[in-house]
Length: 235
Image (cartoon, rainbow, N blue to C red; front, top):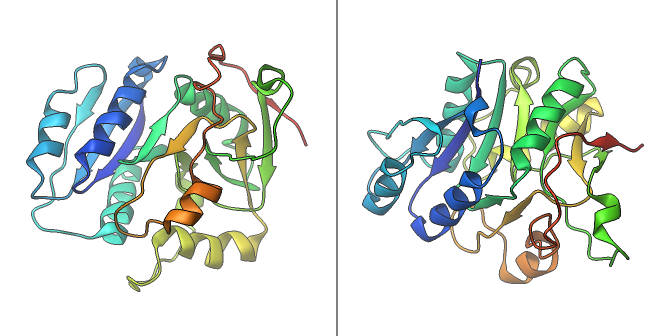
């Protein structure tokens, strides 16, 4: 069975175009299916999705505006009706060229490890490494949840009880109400496999925070590192 990539979108086609371009450069696209969750009213987004020909795609256009929380949670719930493992990419998270390799490896390695809640392709270390190629295959764990290019399993997702407070983003609810209380972890690559380019939109961070923490200028593709399919967890 193919692995679904849930992709939520609203009205930022300039971001979505870059995300789709990044995804199209990945290996193993035949092992995935793209499931869209499109907010209505953005013809540019709809045109971009209609032109996708590099991956199997199943589109959902909302009949009315759901908003970030409802759209994301509904899309993931719908995916888990048919699949046991789901990858999630938002319209402002650009994957590196072996991001899907990381997702495939992580699913195989940790699907039965209940201490791992999710995989996350994002990491931002402002310290300079002498040679990033030395760390290309290294992954670690952290007691946190990051929603920028991530994946999880049905049993772990179904353990979460979300509330309807639209003032608290869905990912913050996961961190506060689930990860912190159960001492769960996520697996991430030391060399980031995604870049968050979102500077405008719902729940985006202030510009200074984006520059300081969110934006990753040191990632797999920026260093022209080779694509790999086997990673190593370093405790």
